[in-house]
Length: 306
Image 1 (cartoon, rainbow, N blue to C red):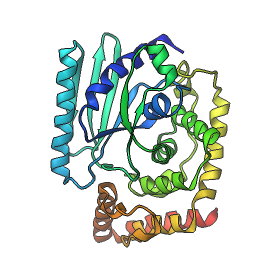
Image 2 (cartoon, rainbow, N blue to C red):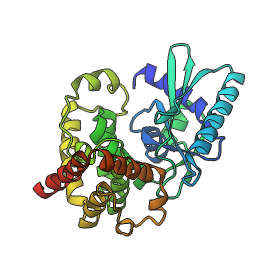
Image 3 (cartoon, rainbow, N blue to C red):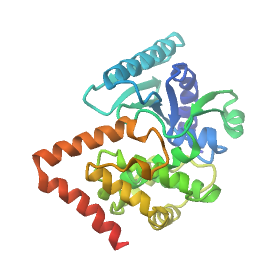
Image 4 (tube, rainbow, N blue to C red):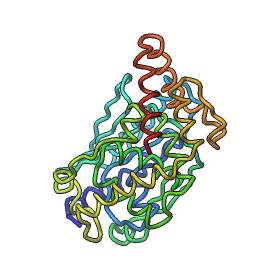
């Protein structure tokens, strides 16, 4: 593992307790998977945070998010660690950039995807990380199924080698289970891009990102071809895992007539990301009916091709 990434993770682990001192934050993403769920198959250098209260109105939630990160910033400063807080009220994230010499860790809280679909559990830093970094850290972490459901959306959207590596761990451990498919469907439904553009995204060239932002992160050697194969497998198995109920639910969102009973989460209709998506689709329907109809038609046509 590259020393620069190792040193960055050391800073990340120093940051974690200060961030999660705020009780409404929980960890998701690659750091959750690789440092807490699995035994550090790769390093991870960002802290992706979920604000867990899905019922809190948006303005109040943003104030709490900012307050939580400001408090973390102050605690870090008392330890000699500098950071910069950036908040964009109209954007999708509040970010805390933590810096120490040449190292940087980004803490990011999503404004739109507030709340969780499954219960959060407290996890201990995995054994390999405890041994390598000689530290003890615990954090509230999203359920594995939800971590992977959101990870698949990220993998299809941005196509980063790190995401496909994490998906490979899922295939090795549990496969793409029905619970993961449920969570994926909900995260796709609330995504800011049109659903068909994410689900049926074109393959990106991974080589440059692989060489510049991935090599040196993993415990064992990983080839570019290996990750390309994971991407192909994901595309195939994901479509196979989407049931008629999943497909109908996605289309019902695009039609602004959501059939909440098709997915097993009782609080689904209260999730801010889905409410926001439907609100925006309704605006599109009112202002540009043709474009509104095209989104549902595009997804329907793509699903029928498979």
